[in-house]
Image (cartoon, rainbow, N blue to C red; front, side):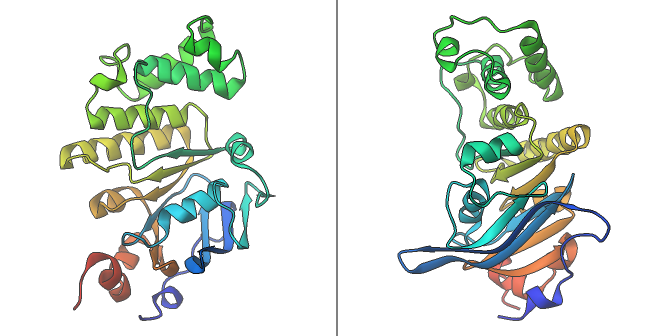
Length: 268
């Protein structure tokens, strides 16, 4: 392996503060090192990519950042606060949002219902069991915020349809909208194009770009689709067997020989 990580440009831009700053993250499972002293940072409003082959440790890193896993070593600072000891729900309240590789939607609920329930959880009004039993009517403000998200994601036709009737691509938009209803400062996207065709992937990328510009949240994107990565992120990290082998501007990193060998399968 070449020393791509040392030859690539340093992450971050001088003069801009970091929203997320994770240092020396090390995670082991039964003696196997899944993450080996990994550093990663994301600036306010920045879109950053994280790529690597299957088993590289990308989802493990996500889970360490979110507090779903506790690393044996390392620290996580978010929005100027050291959060390594905080549980998942407290990190979410600080401004972490996430989507999953496997679509996680609730059967029997409409698109609008997903946004309304998420809004109610966000502002702490009412109880989830009342929502599920249809005993608690949404307020005018909750309705307005749900409609704003429907408009933003162009989900008008599907707004009052059950999510089971949606295509996978439209379902991905619902999941994105649900995450955005929490008003995240940082959105972690785990393989958002998984299962989508080329046209659906391009549409999702374009919608994400528009929404991100409007809301100005930061994004950390894990994605196998290189074209989607290139179209969205300005800076890129590459994991291989739990080690960060490269970081820097997207075009520079994708042209690195070690990256092409580890991730793109270029043996030349």
